[in-house]
Image 1 (cartoon, rainbow, N blue to C red):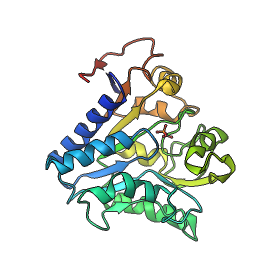
Image 2 (cartoon, protein in one colour):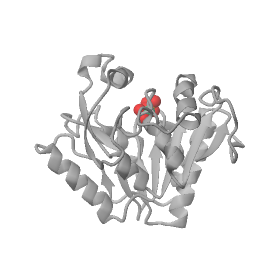
Image 3 (spheres, rainbow, N blue to C red):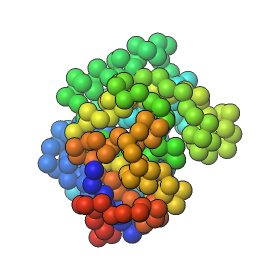
Length: 254
Ligand code: PGA
C-alpha cells in the first residue's frame, strides 16, 4: 500500500483526478470503479474540468459504481444513480449504457447482485477502483465484519453509517434505507488498482487503524494492505493520527 499526503482536500481531489485521467489516457477503454459520498465530489469536479479542457476523453470508458441503496427509485434525487448524474455523468462524454450501478429498486435483489457481479466480470474486471472510507472503516458498503470472500451482495447498514448519511435525507436517520447492494470485498480486491481517498479530521482515527493497524475484518479498509497496487491519498488532517511514515509514503506536491 502506498500513501501520499496532500496539503488539503482540494489538492487531494486534484491529485486523484490526475491519477484517473492518466489511467484513461493510458487505456482509453478503462473500466473505472466509482464511489459516492462527500469525499469524491471534488475529484469529480476536477475530472469534469479536465474533460472541458480537452485533457481527458470518456468516450470509451466503462464505469461501475460500488453501491446503491435498496428501495430507492433510481430517479430519486437521494439515490446514487442521481448523485452520479449530478456530479459526473451528465457533464462528460460517457456513452449511454457505459455507466453501471446496482439496481436497488430491483424486485429480485439476489438476482440483481449476481447480474451486477457478472457484468463486472464480463468487462474483464475493474482496472481502477476509487474508494472512500467510512468512519467505521467500511469500503463500498462493506461494514465491519463483512466477509472477504463475497462478491456483490445485499448488505445491512450500521447505525453509524446511517447517521453519517442522514445529511442526504433531510437529517432524518430513519429515512436512510437500512439496506444497500454493494460490491463485495472480493470484487473490490480483484480490481487491478485501488485508489482510496480520505479527507478531514473526522477520518483521522479510522485512517490510522486501516493503514497502521492489523489487517482485520473489523476494519474492512485494512484489507487494502494486502492489495498489490493500492494507493491512499490523504489530506493533512486525515493523516494527522498516523504514527509512522511508511516506506514509500510521500508528501504530495499539493
Ligand atoms: P464520505 O463517505 O465520503 O461521505 O465521508 C465515505 C464512505 O462512506 O465511503
